[in-house]
Amino acid sequence: MHTRLRWLDCVCRSVPCSLACAAALLLASCGAPSPEGTGGGAAQPSSASAASRPPETPTEPAANGAPDAGSSPRHGAIVLGEHFTTRVVNDPQQGGLPVGVVAIPESWTFDAQVTWNYANYSNPVSASSRAQNPKNAEAVIGYPAAQFFDLRPRYPGIFQFGQNVGGYIYAAPQSPVVTLAGFVQQIRGRQPGFQFVGSKDLPDLPEAMRVPPATNQRGIGIKVSYDLEGSPVEEEFYAVHYVLEIPYDGPQGRTYQINWGLLSIHSFRAPRGMLDERRAVFAAVAKSFRPNPAWQQRLAAINAYLQEQFNRQIQAGYDQIAAAARLSQQISANNDAMIAAIDRQLAASSASGAPRGSGRSSVEKFDDYIRGVETVDDPYYGTSQQSADYQYHWTDGYGGYRNTNDPSYRPGQTESGDWTLMPATR
Image (cartoon, rainbow, N blue to C red; front, side, top):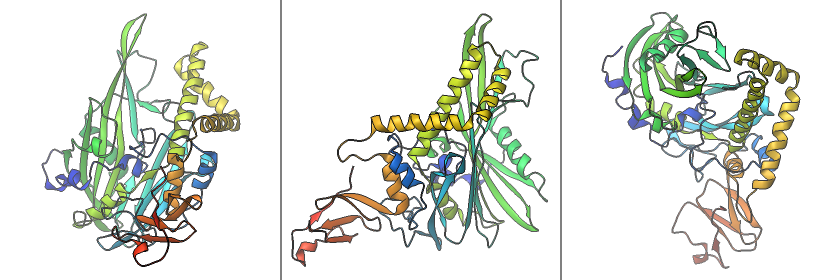
């Protein structure tokens, strides 16, 4: 398990620090802060509604595989001969609100599941995804986080090992490689010819995937091989292992809850011998995700609501297990009422935090992105939406437009009229 191999040496070089793999593949980092520049805007009801629509045209990732606001929505990036197109990941339990968008090769299939369990007050949503080449075994797969907790000191009879408490499993902490190896063994160990090839520490992985920094976190990678439908394949698994000690001071002195587990679990799979040469395609998929700030804000609101309701049960004198059970029963009986309360809260937040003047929220910018447009300051209309195919947008002030990717182009040099360059609306 500790073989030093070259197969992972290039992982952190091929995955730059702008990578948002955790969110990109819905790798159970749903509660993590959004990357800089994509979050923090107040949710606008009209924008959220628009963002729930499918994109009118696919959006091109930039040449390195990451989506770019100025890239072409029609032609798409080409990585190792693969033309990329954009897919929208929707959340059916939240009215079809998009979680985000991801770019994958246009010939590949894509599926994602976003599932809510409100009884898991500490971890209410899980997500997974699969982008797969229908012609062979190539795939980029995202898995739900594996999250656990332990207590120090332990009190016999309170919890049983393996018990789910609020979305966390009671278990003693394990080392990063043992934890990820156990995960891989569980989901792939029954495949014919299964064997571990090697493992490696990846210290730059947490930063690369924008996992909030913490003292006890480590990136880890494991490579395995097995037979899939009679053909040999190899698969690389990646994850960020974390350990967080939370102290409590009470009548019995100081105790600790230890939260630990794996975040950002994902894998690259290919026919044996092809993974290294196809890594650029897999990394481009992983780098392409853009989260929807409206969905992130909704997640934060639901998390806060569930925690508040759980704390009320605790304060009423119920122990943790009974409080979780009562919370589950109440939410099951009043699910519509809970969602309505969240809707009202977000609407109020939107009304009080809406941008003033020409300012635009991150939700509105996300809506532009999935529709392949850029909103610009327009002296004719105030603002207008131009194709994101182009980086530079000119107007004559009377409804005439010229769009180009040539920074030296000036329409006034060849056409009559007073042409003005329209900047992107902030």
